[in-house]
Length: 200
Image 1 (tube, one colour):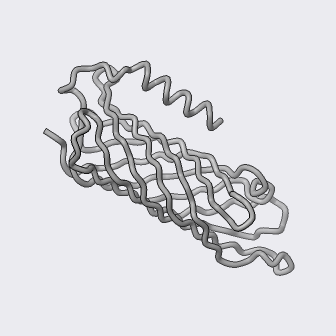
Image 2 (tube, rainbow, N blue to C red):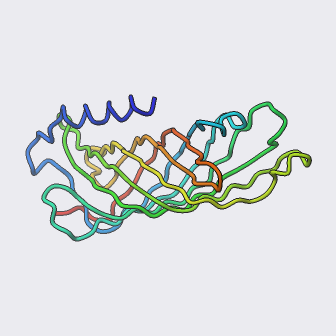
Image 3 (tube, helix red, strand yellow):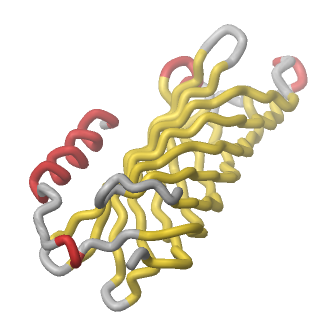
């Protein structure tokens, strides 16, 4: 699933070839603020206990004043809350994650007909805090803090006549580094981001 989504993004990007006229593409300056809904699914050992995670987050972009032609380069910061859906093993009763992760992004604009869009890969590294409530005899209840790496290739679409606003669909792959294992989750997020200034 993960590889298929990435391949689709890459093929779509290659197909468009950033082909429309330069003055049709939208670039930004400074800050952008957004919110999103997220959903992911665990892989490996963690999938024996958890079905999925469902949550929401806030994110902020800041486009740096560097000249890379039509490509924007910037930093990204996200804060996220996700509720974990336990499997019916009666081991984990409830759990949630809080994530805080800074990262970097490239924003590569292109057009699909008259629609302004962009391919935006984001790489982030931060902290995830797990809060788990389990059966007393399991000895796994508590709060745990792990480092986390996240890769998020996204497609963003500008709303016609509201170029400051972008809707985003992103594939997510995250790795949380625990003492004895790595917890992997794969999913997606859907959201919107409002940029304060368009580059002239």
